[in-house]
Image 1 (cartoon, helix red, strand yellow):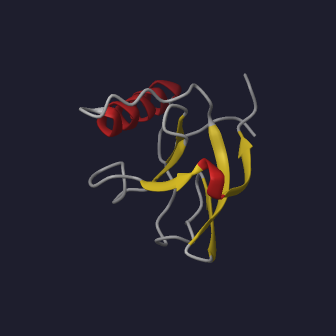
Image 2 (tube, rainbow, N blue to C red):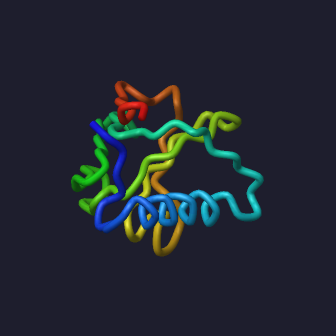
Image 3 (spheres, rainbow, N blue to C red):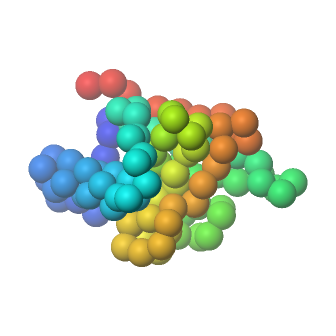
Length: 108
């Protein structure tokens, strides 16, 4: 599947939203996100399994997933929904060791 940002109406808009999310989440934290474009993530937290897929509602907070980023230095996935990482607050975090499965978008 080709990379997309839900609700974006052009390639330029997709790129602007994606870069803005990365900038805001990394601001003041020294985070450098990988260039991977992640489509789906499954992880465990406190004995429960969660799933997030870009464009779908996440089982974690029942909001649409806008983007999933990876911080290789801290080995953390950032699941970004409107209220967690896009418009406010921090993203939903999943440690690499808690991940059960993932799928990246197709390389262009």
